[in-house]
Length: 451
Picture 1 (cartoon, one colour):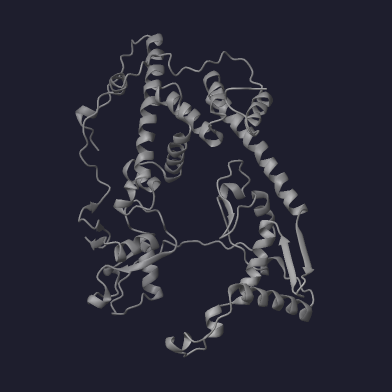
Picture 2: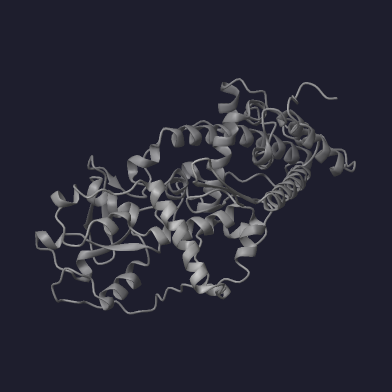
């Protein structure tokens, strides 16, 4: 692809002195820092106003991947940093002035609070990004160990109390760790089953069902608990093998399961957060199912008109599309086959009239006013409800001055010393640095005073 002359890179003269080369590198780095902050500020505002949603995109990170060519994982991190900076005014100010690099700002946002950000900024200004990353990593490890102690304390504090009330009723009260509680709730709900179906026989009309009195949910739970006890007494104790135990759904990042210190998500579905070590314990004796997509099937035409997509046509569709075809969408599992022209309107169930869409974009096409049209066998055009084409092509943008000029117009005084780290090679005492961060975790601590 040819590059327009106006966008061509201007090469430096080989005779440029090393001092001048170094000066230009460090000054430009500071200008890039300031521009990066402004870019993140705009991303945060764009995300806050759900600007990506108007295009039918799943998230701001997906939009960045679509419009700015950023890998999805990196885009998610940039959105996280952009939103986290909103709560760190001093960090934002240093970043905006070019004093802070993106690497340092990103590290601060992982553990920074209004109380400790000045302390972290001191480390950032007087150390390298590697120093700061190491301090943050050690601090998070210490906090993780504290959290693990809390989990162990919860397990030790598990309790069940019961007594007979004055009216003869048995009162039961229990406190259970999250994963034990999830198992209890799972069993309780399984015994309860479908409340409505239990009390409304099959074939009963809606009018008749209105006369059926369904017990309160609390009474249903009480009945289920008694049935659980009766079942145990009838069958005695028969522990199921590990792989056959009741299923508990846990949502977690793969890095968390692998033991990473960067805990992002680890929670029981419709429940509370659990510690990664708890997750790994639960997974020690659990079956693992691997899903492999076979993309080597040869697409073929199925001409028979039908309302359903048969397995052979599904394989051909999956082989051709390999996931959701909506621009910027990376979903390749849990996708639906969508009829471009609906069968109710005379559309045939054939490969040329089908496209794979994830559940999110399938809903947008049906209920959200978006439209899709097949251009040829492998190309599709999507339109927003207002008729604008959703495409990855570039659009004309206003011209921008070079970074240095733009930053000067904003009143920033940036030179070749602005972004240079104030580190002279001395060793950093990581233990003392972590102790300092832990001090700010104490109730009532501020960034303006120390004991």
